[in-house]
Amino acid sequence: MGLSSDWLILFDEGNVLNNNTQREYKYYKALGEYMVNLYGGESNRWIEISSQYFDKFVIMCKEILSRGDIFYNDTFIRNHMINWSKALFAGYNLSIPNDQELVKFFKESTKKICPQAIAPPKGIIDVLSTLYNNGFNICTSSTKLSFELKEILSGMKVDLFFQTLYGPDLIHCGKFSSDFYRKIIDDKKMNPSNVIVVDDNPIFLEMAKPIGITTIQSNSCILDRPQSDIVDYLYTDSNDLISIIAEITGITIN
Image 1 (cartoon, rainbow, N blue to C red):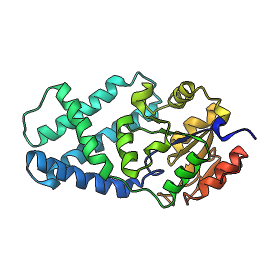
Image 2: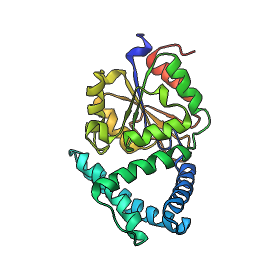
Image 3: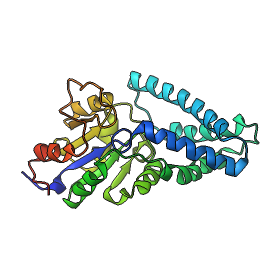
């Protein structure tokens, strides 16, 4: 059976810890207000500029994912922070700061906006609390950066439940291949057979499965997404995670 402390549970953030659709609305509302307070203009215009940038960024990430590229990620991350910030300034014909100031602006914006942009599905906060109180090792395995995750989870008041907030910046690797999970497992010095990944996206779960990780597909926010053929478990109610994890680990969870 083993101990709960022998197990590592990796949670994706979007559509697992937060409903992306609901959170996106709150994010853009907070962004618009933040930018108006700093630079004036119209909230809807600031939202439009950011949305256009992210639409292009998501397409680029999907292209990388489809190729299965593995690459050192720090430059990619820094460029993302610079380009998002630059897009906002350029979209309103404002003077564009140097790259160092643009990175600083990205991080400061994150601290102000992300704690307001939370929409946890019913039951997930209680699930995290229960797993933490039962001694499981809980970390994130997200496409978001570690400092973004800190602000989001702080806003949810669950940040203390997590040992490490893994995003691409901590392991110098994008969430584009199995290497992403390998690097987390190596960092935690865990056996893959004692690792569980919870994610809404079958593509990411299919990256984790060949390593020997047990996979759980979250449909708590996307009810009609079909279960991948190689995913081990699927849930629609976050509360069901407790019984699923108890079955996987053989540990009674109180």
